[in-house]
Length: 202
Image 1 (cartoon, helix red, strand yellow):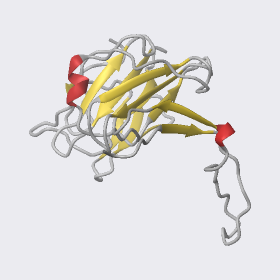
Image 2: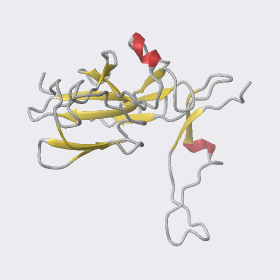
Image 3: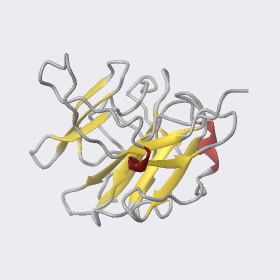
Image 4: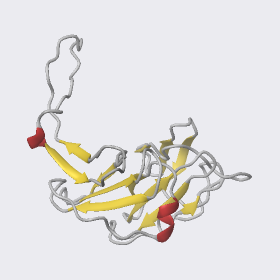
């Protein structure tokens, strides 16, 4: 049986370490008072968390796979900025079929309406789930598709950045599959990354 591997979040401090060439180095391995155990399960690897802090600056959401970079998605919530965490929360049934590291992003459309998106990648198929109420409830994972083939990638999307023009996002995956000028109206199916089919405006 594998050793117990708890999922741990840390409050970080900069340390002056010899040989760091002036770059800040973070090492809190022995500072247990700065660590919070989010979850643990004997014999089960838990890691690769994706967190999201909501606008109230207190509520945090976290998702992570039940396994090393693969496995069903676990979902939890903190109401105190990550100091304590809920039990595992209910999720749509097909989140159990996730086979990659999930990622969370909160996007706001031109009308000011927010949705949280959860991406679940795979080499041949990226899927996406939506929350319309800041994580209180979720829809199932739905496939993202290109014009002639499934849209795939690992750790999808590893980043989503507002480009500042009010209408586009840039996202990427660890396999090098990239999206340029993805409209701020992401949908479950897409032509490449430029023609989403489910709007953020609803």
